[in-house]
Image (tube, rainbow, N blue to C red; front, side):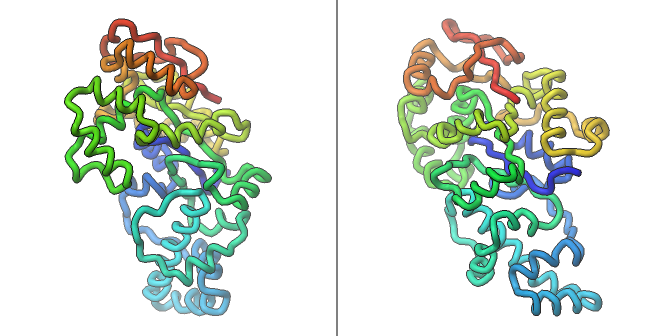
Length: 338
């Protein structure tokens, strides 16, 4: 039986939409940073799926009344269910150590009740199958009780999805170079959009990214390094998942998907693999090896000086790359995988 809940840690610029489309095709509802990738088809959980959450949010007596009345009219049940889901999302988000960057209409009473749910019980409250996407999982910010529960059970499974740091830097620069209305609402993105836009060349922007310790994405990636080493964490790279459409290989993608299906305990991996859609080359943010056309020897020196610890340990030409490399750029590195 597939794991009912997943946590995906994917640093910014890692090509997360490609993985989100894959987990969504496997039947997982994306929450967190990728919650917008799934179209809301209007499906609602049945009373059996909703009952645990309703009891935790409203108490046994009120939940019982709601479930009883839904036989004649589901309006009241649905009106109570959605605020409970919203409050539960906030509880998950907080326990995963993620910043709350904007006010949201969360009922404080519901949030307070759900925040008292034991960590081992929390994953069971979400109806259906859910996949939580976060940009980082900082051991100093995540809830200690949540981490202890995960340490004891390895549930929910954690997937660490990452990408060559050079391509992540190029993707962040591409995002921050867009018009002001398209960089999102994260405070560091708003600030660094102004800084990046004031620089006249791509070379200057890459130099900034490599030398400014506050540049978006690098600090959080460094705090995620423990995920590469933990034996209970499933590690997946964008380079593996990209497929031929984005500069990788079909063989590497198939192997990565087989491992992902095994990690989530899918009961029919062969059938699931055959049903997954092939990647399509529709986005500038997804190709592998774009850094090769932008990084100079000086950029490589700065990378080794400031961020050498974020480079994969084994240099190897393991994936296809796009375009010619600039003179002096070293060979790409084979991403770590499990």
